[in-house]
Length: 164
Length: 134
Length: 122
Image (cartoon, rainbow over all chains, first blue to last red; front, side, top):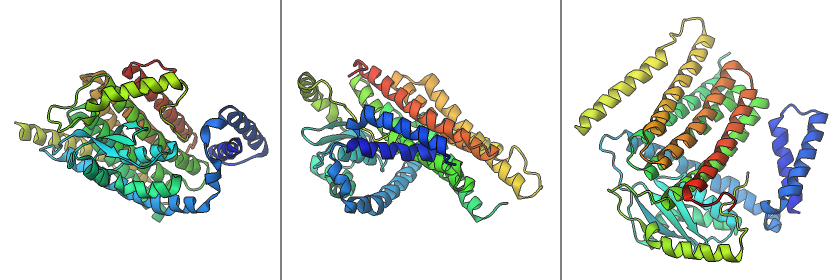
């Protein structure tokens, strides 16, 4: 099941890479995708039954992506303002943030989203305790609860619907 | 011909190039590795994605356009992961934070984390550290 | 002192950006010439950003600084490839960009592991 999903995904990527499609190119792509799926299929999708639920796709496309793009734009304007400011208004530090997410993909997406949003960057993940170590460019809260609400609260409730 | 789509694409490219420049300026101005990593990763990732999106709009839905969209996907998925890896590597290599920093919770907890990871490595040696969906 | 150096840097930067943006003067040959001049000046500004990255590679006090600058330089090259593809109309430049993005990602991961002091097959 997992290998089949990876095969379809890899073939799709191949088709986009060699866009004007022709029969020999498509056949070669099927061969390469089958090889890739056979070799690394077990690493890709751990719980394939989740992929059958269409509500997760809708959540991903229409709630996670707009929030993500908006936060990303805010982050860039924020960083550009801090860099161009002559007084360099930074107050950096590493704080702890608590998270409820357990699955690997959910944690990866949460860490990537935190890295691309205003003033924060993931340094390390303690998966057993559910603690993320976040480097902030301007620390407002060092208390774990307040920092969690401030930093990961923007994404966590969405990602819980999608990946848990 | 220069039409509306070209103008929108050129606006995207101009904004992307400006953000690239700001990101590299942050790389020069900010005081320590972690701050530089933040500014550079955010600004340059969004800037390059914006340039690629403008290219996709101008080239149109042909081979180049699809490849530019795929390239946006790869850049967005890989840039935060490599930033995270570099930040963790720098911290474990013992590079201090800037002296104006407020708190460093990670070095307080690092001994416990190392012990836990050692135990996990002894039990299950084949655990991947980070997982990407490339 | 700090304000003075900021003002000096800002003046130099604005001057260089203005010079790069108008350096190939757009002859009034119609909209296509303006378009080509726009792509060229965008490419020059990306080159300026690359020079700033190389300054950090040269000066970086620690090896992590150099690693960060190299990683960012790879992403800048992807943007340059996209501009090349648009300027010349050859779409295989974007293939180079995709390959460069993935290879610099793998290289950055490997170098970060090396910096961390762990074996690469962990």
